[in-house]
Length: 277
Length: 320
Image 1: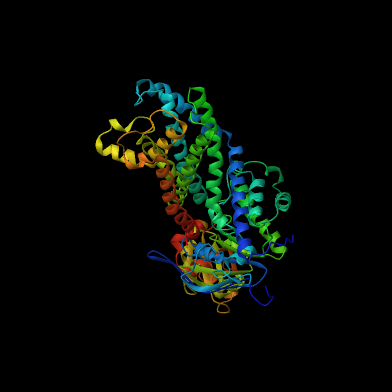
Image 2: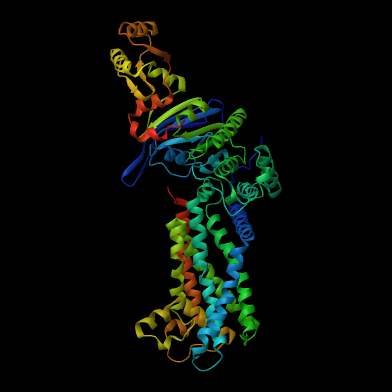
């Protein structure tokens, strides 16, 4: 049973190639996991459709869009953003499960690139997220949501959503590594709902009490939703005297994502490297 | 690795977690080949020692070399040459056994084709080919430990760390793990095995280090350790009323352990101090009718209890 293991790389370029192939391997792992858990996949894909019906028709029947317009057209950017930030809980759960089951320890006992594990995790999440987004778009089109300002702007909107998702995933990685326990992570899942609801996703913030409105207006989710409404040409785009991030929603979304990445990428990689050390 | 260098060498390893010092100056020298048993109760520092040697944890002080490389400075080189199977089966439960092995092979940077072939080969060799395509979460406890053990063999590493590989397993599954370990040793692998089970160390290990409260308190071959605390004389009396007399006679030799239920009195004797016929004569003179008298080597359990003096914590873990 003699097998010649490859030798550890020495050059910088070799290391980079390692990191990339390790990342790709871990994305493959995430996809195989999904294939093996069709229930989870169906759940992840049906959830957005349920939200469209629930908000679009149940709540939507009682909500008036500021400046007029179809509520379901107003709603869809909010739901896109909401599904984007659910990546926080999916990555946190996956990472916490790996940490509690000892899978992380095996990875760390291997000569793999240290940063490949978190990168692979968020990379896999992006692919799943993109698939969910496609389903969501289909639902949206079915209930009357439209892209009004052309494809380039729409693609820019989807790009922003994916960027935000990616940035928030990294926060999930860090939390997963910190809680290191599947059950605890499970209990934190509902926290994602107030974060997504406390925004302009489903209702205009104008009707909220002043202090709550400040929180909602400065919520990164609100910036992303406002940016998408603008880029898709959907109703409810902020106008007049609004909070700073909503006056420049695209820039604000980019900035928020950048800030999240600058904070959470180094912290997560560092945390992974020194886990239990 | 040069032939003169031990497979595992450690000097003065220390590690503190908050207020508790888990490892307080561990020295180890494990020669190439065979099984080295690290024996100790829960919390003795076995796992922390293994985590330091397998590059998962940085020592606060001390040095260690594994397969010829420093575990801190050349961690990646060490990682290519070791396999680690933990106390908690560290597999991805949402993947099949085969996919787990392929995943680990890819992370060792084997080309995809080689990783796939290696996974098939290992499953075949260790009798898990049939279960290879089932998800790991459907495996029984014993199968999980076996696939976990097999995952540590992907690169055929010269040094294996097995951290309590049989804790919590039924006797049959333990036997299967033991067989696998013996097979690996026959291939020339060096195995560092931690265990709370004394019979496991007795059966598998060529050398044993007893760890207690973060320090190695004794080491040697199982036989050497047994010899160190001498032999024991066991007396089983035929009637319950002779039990007290027998205990009185044996008290003159040493401090007897008594077990009234099986009417057995056991006393440690240092080598050459007492002969069996002398004991029998003494018993005869006291009018004690005996059913059985034996002079025997102590079990590792007895060695262990003697060394650690922590009978209360180990008694329940001593396995049949």
